[in-house]
Image 1 (cartoon, rainbow, N blue to C red):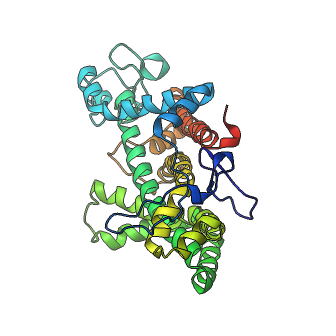
Image 2 (image 1 turned 30 degrees about the vertical axis):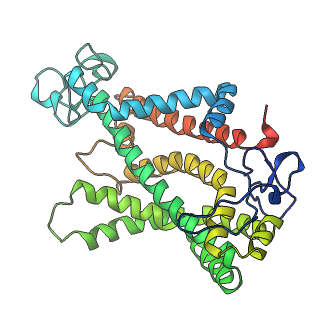
Length: 357
């Protein structure tokens, strides 16, 4: 992934741009030392990362990217305002309205009103069986998915940066050991490991016969996702840094006496920021979908925490009798993942100077 206003040289890795635009060499840009350390006089540095304003302007030129950004912001707003919306709406995601109010559910637990019980009192209908409100379950389900996805993306990005940049810069034995370790980890079937590790970790963290706290469910999923999610980013950064460390601006900084700390944090990291941003944008929908899959299979978030995957699982059980209940969480999950993926594509294009418009 190339950074804005930079050009890349042909290399075997997808390294971020390291030479300034217009043919300028890195030596023409003064170096800025890291906090607490004065940089070597005349040491070169790479072009600065694109400003947020410039990135937003480029995304706004892409109609698809703009629409995706609006949808993502809408989901974020709904997640943040879920308690307020629920209070104004007069419903909550845990109360069993269908069981507490006669006439809402049939003897078989299905909503009596048509279309899954949609009415003026329950805008998206009622959950079959327990009779909970579907709208508030969806709103709080966004919070569940976003919390796990953003936390997992943050952890995997941090681990990927530490491993990828360090190994790419050091090379040698560290590079060979990391290559072997990553190949071993990638050889395992990820989904099967997630299914196997989740109950194992829960059993180790919670005493037998003790109710599992809600925060423990979130922590287990974040740990499981983080255990393998950092590898693709680390491999990509390792390849980029291996190419960047041989570039003239890094060699010049090293010749001028710049420390390894200065080279890594002031020369290499600014040139892979575009990769990190795109990775984080694309990782969020991946973790949202993975969390929904685990909950669908029964090893994710448990009752009574609202969760889209568990709603879809319940909807699949009553689909023939009540298809409406599966419709809302399915469409919400589809829109959320699709919008984030399209936004990731828009960010990638906005950070690519060759796609500048």
